[in-house]
Amino acid sequence: MELPQGEKRIGSIVLFELLGTALLCATTNITSDPAVVACMYFVALLLTFTITGGHLNPALTFCVYVAEGKWKDNLQILIITWVAQIIGAFLGLELGLLLRVIYAEGDKAIPGFDIVVPPIANTAGESYWLTVLLVEAIGTMIYAAFFLVVKKDAGDKDVVVLSFMMAAVYYGMSWISKQTSGGLLNPAIAISTGFNSQWNYVFVGLLENPLWEYFWIAWLVGPMLGALMAPFFTRYHFDMLAKINE
Image 1: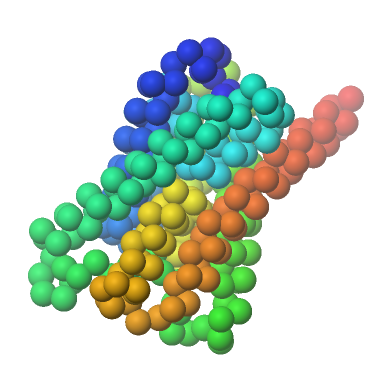
Image 2: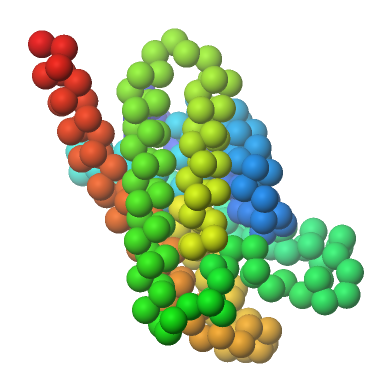
């Protein structure tokens, strides 16, 4: 969307968003260390930044869509990019689980989702999912707002520098929110892990806590709310800077 003539290279956008999101989701399901996930995010950004804009996240794509305000012109590429990201997340999920099965031993080979699940055992009833939603929304808003600022001020800055800045912010937001919400900040990963967890709970019986359904909603809606707020936050920020500089 923000790239010139992006509608003419939809094939490249779909391919690289799919691959980049797959790498990110696979890493998320292999390790619980936000630093490792941020490093993979940095690599994925290097691969995709100049080709797709480096979204790798439906929330960021939605954020850019709202910020640009070209509702009709960008609607097609918005939907296509979303589909690519979600398919990439499912591919990444399966890749991550496969690697865990190959390298894990004993019970660790069972695809439990302790990596991205908040501490459900410590919750006070079902209302905790609202806290998860709020944390995901705030974390994504800060992350997406920084993404817009980076895009606006990018200029001739090196892609490596821009990717490192984005990965650093992602690490910070993920690390802060990890203990409360799992630190996903990405609806594509939420959809893939949520679907798989519900499948395991209903048909396989690997999961014992039905609260998964509520957290699935929180992981999906929270980041989208944050992405919706981010353009207005950055617009206010730039308006204030303009007034100060007058």
